[in-house]
Length: 399
Ligand SMILES: [Fe+2]
Image 1 (cartoon, rainbow, N blue to C red):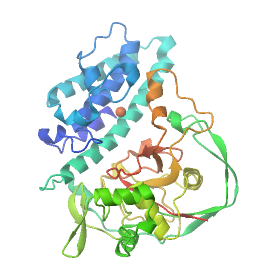
Image 2 (image 1 turned 90 degrees about the horizontal axis):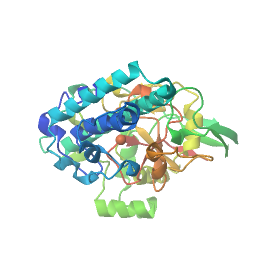
Image 3 (image 1 turned 180 degrees about the vertical axis):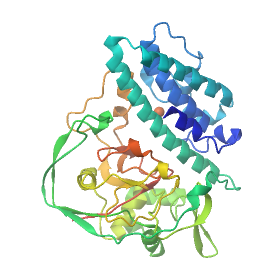
Image 4 (image 1 turned 90 degrees about the vertical axis):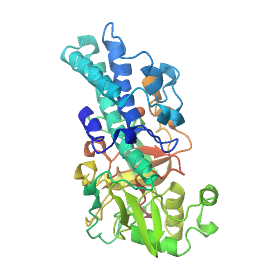
């Protein structure tokens, strides 16, 4: 897992790893350092007797948001950190990894369970940053008029999409949330009951072709289709299409990690905000599913899909009967709230998820840059409704 993060930087030049293209993105170098800081802070410092930090200032530089750990460097200025150099970050990773291996070979028995739990959390955190590293590089490369190519493999756009059909569920009490022995984040717990009215949910996400119908029907210029905050975002941000879309001589193009390519009408639409997803649903006479409805439907089928391991790094047409996983994170109508009975854990790790539970929307299903082993039906991702740079699309629900 740790090696994979470094491998993601193989196609990059040293300069690519330093620059930050937006306040919400981070340089690749920072991702490499921060994921290492996580293990140093939450595993090595508490459990290795006399552990000497690799560098006195790294706790300040590479702490993301953990107030309990201490102050941290400004998030929007991470791209100013030309020093420490990339080579020092790799040294930092090797140092921490070797200390972790030593600890895992000989943990004190009374702390072994806690060490294991924190290492597993650290690896899941590492996977989240692997996805962010790719989405942040895509944004950075898009800002460059040369439109650099990260991976040629991603250029594969052939394939057909299955017809959209509706899957019906009766009204009733349904349990959602994580169950079983495998890892889950605390925000997937506790498992709890929900009363749900009867509903129908689409068998697959909305495609570029379907989204183009909305766009060509004046979707971006009709205020009645939009939430008030969404319409404000359209006007202030000048939105007229999904992020990374450009029109050249009557043809829509999009930027991918493989460079510029024509918009394929059979691919799932991607890089839309919650506001665009909501406006599309209203235009279509439908709605977005709640996260409960999504989870009820998704757990029925196989958890297969286009994840990072396919190497495409881009949404791909899907001909399967039902498709809930991979390709694009799907906006849900649910705001990101604690489940009934949720308690953030004590200490700094309690800051991992709980303190973000306001003003964000839940997304489900994983994307084409999510590691396959990272996702499950109960997984809750969350972002602010205006954000578009992650691989985010939508699916419809009805009734
Ligand atoms: Fe993090």
